[in-house]
Image (cartoon, rainbow, N blue to C red; front, side, top):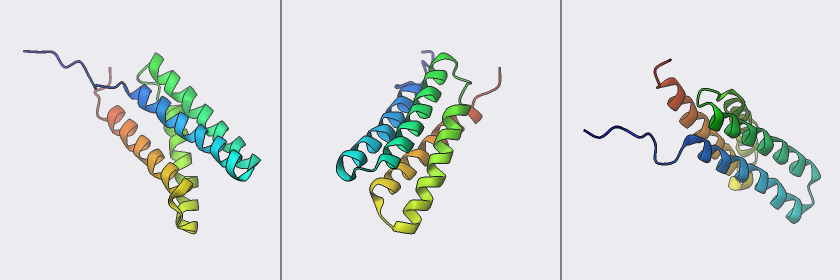
Length: 114
């Protein structure tokens, strides 16, 4: 019988991808519209998500920075999406952040405590 080697892609790589998506959205917004506030906020949240993904890569139980960052992003951008009805960029980031919260929360809560 073959031993389960875990997920095909480690969760922290998905976290790094999410962090890159958030940060690149701020850079794109700045280039297109010159929004310094959007750039600063997205780089801050992208950096925090990256930090959380790095912490997760070092200790799979250390998800709290990533989880709180993704949850906050889901709430803020979800509210913006609800008010504006525009999928880009608020709806995309809200959806991606909500998926991250669900994936990381389920993965962590579903594992037995050691």
